[in-house]
Image 1: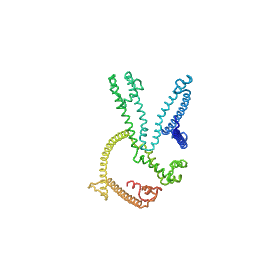
Image 2: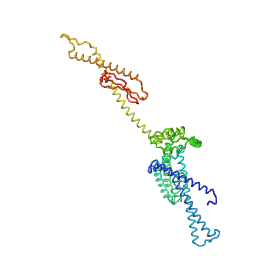
Image 3: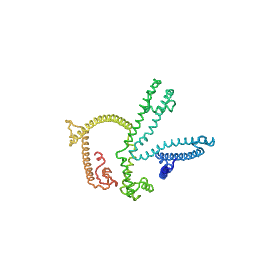
Image 4: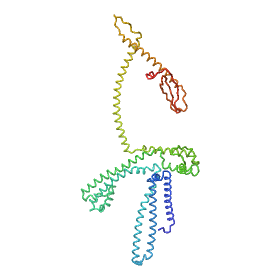
Length: 492
């Protein structure tokens, strides 16, 4: 089949070389993952949809190559059979067995050609799937693939319901129209015709004259259930996930031309020796004995890879930090329209509950304010009574039998109240003076250089009040004073 064209052999060899390169790269990735995570865990990490597509591509390539080699062998056998006779002379085969062998060989070649054609028709889909894997590294190009990936679970469940309803209408159409139209003669043909009706490729004028009532009922039901309702539900489901994925793409994500410029810049710097390959840096990090919790600085990268410049090391660390932050915030990166509406509903309910709770708090505060006012008025009257009692400096005079006055027990009580008030006044004045001195001494104290937190506290130990200062280096004693009792500090 090559007809002496040498470039066909070159294309086949180039294609086989590219397939072999995929096998080598994927094998290296498997061993790298197993050496890093172990055999079982490494295989689990490696088995991703993208790697599965690569191996499917390899398997399909091997199957196509096998069928092509088998096809060449069958063509050779067919040519040998044809050489036993003449293509211009009827009945030139030697015997009937040779004629039967010829037709059997033709049948085999035709069947093999159909199978090979089917595989060749599927092969471009796997090639484009590998292209999508490569495009997934570009955030803005990966929006479509990420949308399909994120919506895969919802699409599966929706597709199950959609398929059930679709088969229902296909069976119904087969029963109604199989006598009158060849397009509905059996279930596969009816399913194909129903799909054409779903996308609008049909002529209703041709069908409406046959069983007009049932045909109209079937058509109206099909339009409202599948075309209007479920078809739009599918679009809404996809757009919901698309909005979620689109909102996760921040403005600082590189565009296609920016990423192409970076690739060209890295290639030129690598050619001129101004940078080190990222694969070399990654290999050096894997071979190093640094613990997983180690802090890697730009000097660490230069120690592991001497050819790495300070600029490149800073770019690598900055990009790694940004990627880690994006992975940590992946759950909060975006929200779909349905999630946003649900969150708004929850916020609205929480605000209504908060409004009710705040109303109760306000009512409690109003009642507490009234009670506090009453307590303040009572306290004011008590203070006024004490103040009037302190003014009585002279003991009660001895009452003569002819004059009325307070009894002796009341006079003793008033005298005790006066002494207690004088003691409280002295204690309060003394405690206030001592604590004021402490505050002045603490304010004038020198702050240590390593202190990041400065706190003053008072502690009562026996009859002393101790002032302390706390910082990064520990707790330091500032000063203390005597003569202030626990009771005085408590009153203050």
